[in-house]
Image (cartoon, rainbow, N blue to C red; front, side, top):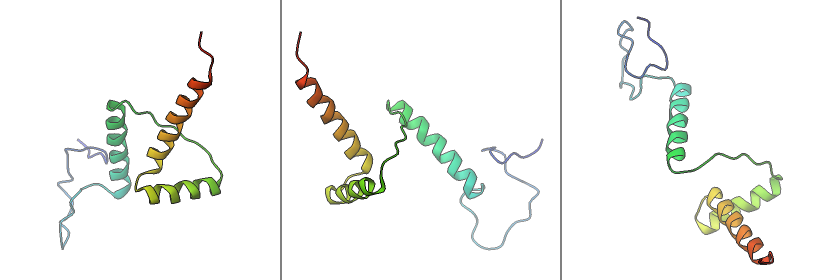
Length: 97
């Protein structure tokens, strides 16, 4: 049975032991990042979140980052709040009936 890079349970038993502090994770950094992102996507999915990619002018992103820093929150939280408030504002403007 060959050892796969993404295999979480099988470690390479034939590799020579390295000197120094043992690694806390047997996988290379690229694989760790891939595994962590997969876990994060699953966690977000269970929380009812979906990914969305948006292209915006650099100046707007810089202003958004500055405002997020002032408010001590994330860029995502600000965008979510702005969109929610925009929908609430639009629903009030629509005529009922």
